[in-house]
Length: 99
Image (cartoon, rainbow, N blue to C red; front, top):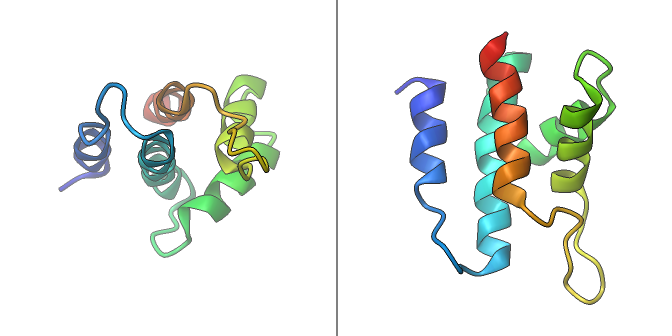
């Protein structure tokens, strides 16, 4: 299975009105698969790749910000910086697909 198929498989796991934590995990995985392809890092944890992408100046600001939102911890009241985690993942995925 190629990386694009892996991403599609992961994104299909997301259901409308699903637990926000699960949706966030799916988004991180999908974005992480794209970043593994970009960085040629098959064994690096997805969160580490997201953190790297958030600081990587080769990415447009929009992609860096999406990576930062996905990589941030949830707040004490269980709120995520990423209001639309699947949308943030897709920003990253679409950029990597263009390269």
